[in-house]
Length: 227
Image 1 (cartoon, rainbow, N blue to C red):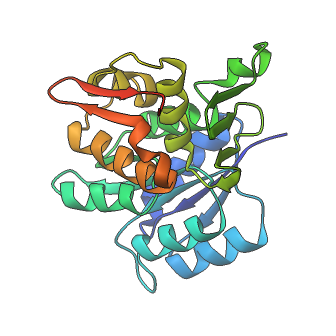
Image 2: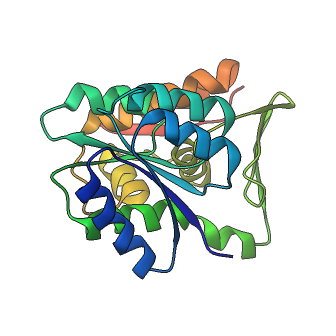
């Protein structure tokens, strides 16, 4: 089944160019010129990934991102100006998975989308052990379900991949640079604060199990068993 991309962009030329690239790559594409249209489409049709501009009429990208995250863990890429670093971090705090800076290459946008739509851990479906466990924390690689003390929690695509990578490398220090390469790819230009924001969000969702993700000063992060 074809994947469906929702492109939310008020600049007609940018939206049309991006749409053509995704159509040529074999995706179905939905278009929205503002946040209100975006939510209407998202709530009525199947969407596999959202590409979301921030500055839009009627309803801005922040509001759309927040509303989408209340209903779904569908991957979200935000479009932002290069100078708006704080905006990028806010997007991550609201649940976005990646960002692309304006002006951008449609090829870069397509590559980022493909990376999110094809999980880094898709090969896990073929592995013998399909569930990672650590005492009262359980991560199912097939269903992408995560349970803390038996209670299901909701992680974004990126948060799930970070937790999976850390749990697969239990008791090994993983640097921020390693996380960036593994989760976002070599071409990613974000800084340490990007990783820190995702780790903070992940810890909040893990609740009393948050301290299994240890910060190793000037080195990175390590997943440990709790005593």
